[in-house]
Image 1 (spheres, rainbow, N blue to C red):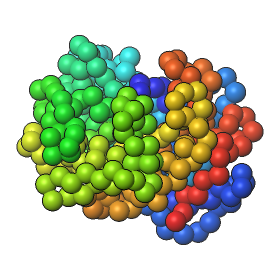
Image 2: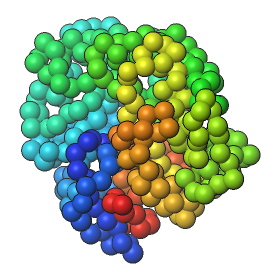
Image 3: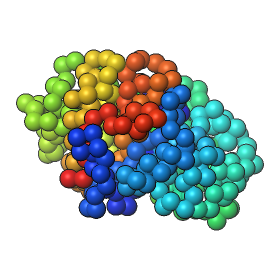
Image 4: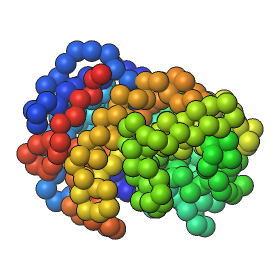
Amino acid sequence: MTRQHAASTRTLAAALVVGVLAPILTEVQSIGVCNGMLGDNLPSPADVVQFYQSQGIGAMRIYAPDPETLRALDGTGIDLIMDVGNGDLAALASDPAAAAGWVRDNVLAYPGVRVKYVAAGNEVDGGDTQNILPAMKNLNDALAAAGRGDVKVSTAVKMSVLASSSPPSDGAFKDAYMTDVVQLLKTTGAPLLANVYPYFAKTGDPSIDLSYALFQLSTTTVSDNGLTYTNLFDAMVDAVYTAMEKAGASGVPIVVSESGWPSAGGVEATVANAQAYNQNLINHIGNGTPKRPVSLETYIFAMFNENQKDGDETEKNFGLFNGPDKSPVYPLSFSN
């Protein structure tokens, strides 16, 4: 899902118990939360950052540079994925000076912000995909020249970049540009950012068992090249790993830059299903996937419901929290 709208290996702890959030001190997996801003009833950027801190959430994703958010993040220690914004991708691809200016204005201007990844586009498709690789190269060069080679540049992709994904060993990229992208990531040591939504796979194919999509006990299991899959999320992530292997980039890690489940607005979009999916995702990612059984850095989409998002009604209902009162949509625990 293309959006204007966060995970790290740092400790994150928070609990939502019977609708009340209570921070707790315990080590959990690599979880962040995406900060979408397409609503007219959302807390101020400063309040949002304080809310992340109060809940012990150690990573955020934003979908374009936002000065108020960046100022609020300064000195907090919250890790950040910052998208360049799809509308700026062409300029960054065509002009190294534009990339240098973007780095100056959005990274160097906020030395106290822990920018971890820059996403050169989110779910870019069509002819605009030609801008991804040159934009990534220009941004890498600008960051290196500015002494910020610690900031890794990637792009966020959806599952449709694969020509095939089932079974996972059939995973392969559909278009040649993705081979070039992952080869660059292999060179720079950056991860591929992948938006992984079992919800959309399930609603697109009603024959998929709902329990398999929700990480619940299911009659569905997939045996593939000696690996056993008991949930759809793992199968989808490993299909992307397989595609990178076939593109000669087997060492490139994946960061799940979005995953979530809507609580209202469409088929299978219920509070119970959203709670089950996100809780089970949190509990699961410390195990990694059958192909890569190591903790998987993951960002839940999203912090708040967004009443101004375009598209299906479900798009407005992926949030963990409601607007200005920051009340939880459902109980959720970030510990296990």
